[in-house]
Length: 464
Ligand SMILES: Cc1cc2nc3c(=O)[nH]c(=O)nc-3n(C[C@H](O)[C@H](O)[C@H](O)COP(=O)(O)OP(=O)(O)OC[C@H]3O[C@@H](n4cnc5c(N)ncnc54)[C@H](O)[C@@H]3O)c2cc1C
Image: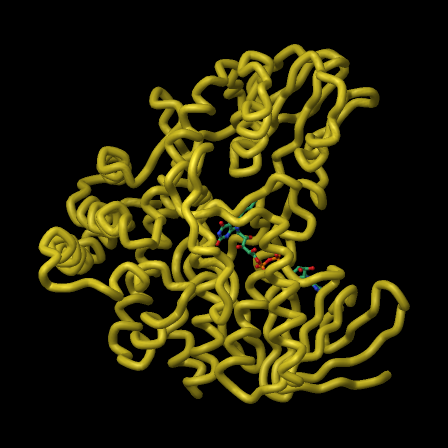
């Protein structure tokens, strides 16, 4: 069997593999071999639904060395006044461009699309069946750990009877005959997107039944903006978060405080959320979703039959003319963490909440600049992905500890401040002492962080 070798072998050319490889290419002379079973770089963005968009501003998504955003604000629509959100097609085209015009011309990257990595260095082409062996002389970078699941590649975990009109939200744009009604199954980011897409195309809110097995706390997108005019929103929200963490007397009290300061939003003010997947949303989007009155909170769907939907805690009627839209794929199938640096393998995970691409670039930088695995793992503790509300506490604790470790390393601080994937640095770059309102927020953060870290430990101790 042919053997190919390179300093680094990267499995997966999704956003994480691309952000990692980018740092290897721009910050070292290393050779890199990239393998992916998809035919194009960009990972799940290539198979996402046609109306998918980033839910964070494009200004700090992608790879470190290339802007994704045109630096524009959106006007009109549900993201009015906020930084532009790239569409799924833009994200895919962007990664394709990075591969073609940056990685491959470097002469140090070899890319093997449509090839499956089967472990132990064995690779099989999905098209020719050819097999070859890969060897990393430095490290194998396993970017498959998150195991992102999207509706088009997902098998629902409930039965669907013959004759039921059922489709993933990917197929919604192909509907040409209005059905009697729509049943949207799932209340995560994709369920929200399906409802917003239908409402945006004039579907009567009363024609939509929304199956919400768990309500979610959502992040206000306004507080994720990284252009100057949003300094008070974004940094103010971070100060509010630290102060809420520092003062909360219980977990419920913490969430009440975070909601009162506008850090968290929810769709139905009468229902206390139990889920947190870190989805962001704008207030105009919330207002749209609140128009849907047929919200079913009877647990998960167990089966869709010809005339009824069976759920954990009851049944609702349905008809053969109703269109059932599957949004039940859970984006991240694997929410366990493992050490990022182990022997000759690096398993990128998030080292800062909500920031997979910043995290991948950061881990690559640490890989190139530190020699000892203990030091590398000290700087890169994996932040657990959130699912239940309490996970917010767990990942914030790890994130604060990481930040504390980073602050001790001046060169690392400098790298972060200059990196385009680091949102906060964009805001802090031009801060001057004369901007008293902004300086007051920075001071609140500086005072709040140690108190938040201390109180978090107390709150975490109350969790079983
Ligand atoms: C609808 C939606 C919106 C999102 N919006 C945002 C956002 O705004 N901001 C944000 O930061 N994140 C967002 N995310 C999270 C998103 O998942 C990450 O940003 C990122 O795209 C994940 O990249 P990845 O490389 O980890 O995973 P993937 O995109 O799944 O890439 C993994 C790659 O590995 C390949 N692979 C897996 N196993 C093998 C194997 N054995 N052999 C060969 N190849 C293999 C796959 O083919 C794939 O290309 C969103 C997610 C979804 C679903």
